[in-house]
Image 1 (cartoon, rainbow, N blue to C red):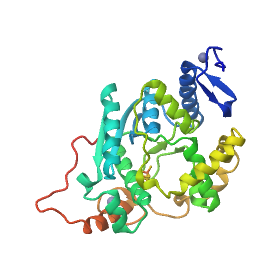
Image 2 (image 1 turned 180 degrees about the vertical axis):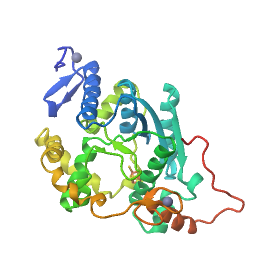
Image 3 (image 1 turned 180 degrees about the horizontal axis):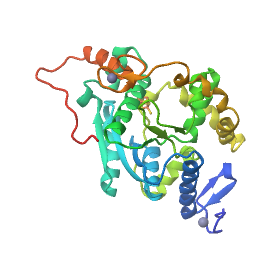
Length: 318
Ligand code: Q46
Ligand code: ZN
Ligand code: ZN
């Protein structure tokens, strides 16, 4: 197996490109694909201040590393979700990555800073754990970006993630979600810009990238992901990809090229929804009290509060 660029010994095959690569040229491919995604979707300006949503897993650490290699000034933001040992370990990986490279990592913690965690929040609000978790992370990332005056939030979502989400949205004809399924959501209504530079890379690519770059990441999946429908969509797409290399890419980028525009009018912003500041926290919301504050209220009602305990804000937060 020879590298398609230098004809030296290859260590990885990338079937959707019908090519093999040596370590050096595989790493270059990953950087080039991220650069291409950034340019193709006008994700970032060279002087943008970037906040990376970091989980301690391979995708978020890979995107943080690639952004640095591409010359962007990027800080990280980690949210402790209170999911037992998984959260403790993931925080450790995120902190070590930042410390070893002299990068700035801001840390927020749901229980410490907001009085609840994902398990008790989801129980109290009668929401699936991933629903309570996703809502909390979106809110806290948005708030961190606003507080720290960052221009963009970067997430490590890759092609497998985006194709699986697209499959779920198509299966259920979630037209409002289809209208927003873009790797670049521009800033609007007080929400910061959100971009996904790894949208041209797969999970296998980012795992190989981390291995080759010596990035230590948390391999374990979140224990609360069990039963998450996206995992079954990913498995189905992997089966299709095995017989049809490039199918995932064609599915997702074909949608963006040929169909996404048709759903643009289905998004909340153009469907007559008014956005105003949440009366509790000031975050932009379509309700008087934003979804996060409502979740926090229900979740903290259900949690016995220790006497003398005050909710405090972390000094390290931006
Ligand atoms: S962390 Fe949170 Fe994921 Fe765990 S509870 Fe679900 S959404 S699976 S990215
Ligand atoms: Zn090579
Ligand atoms: Zn609020």
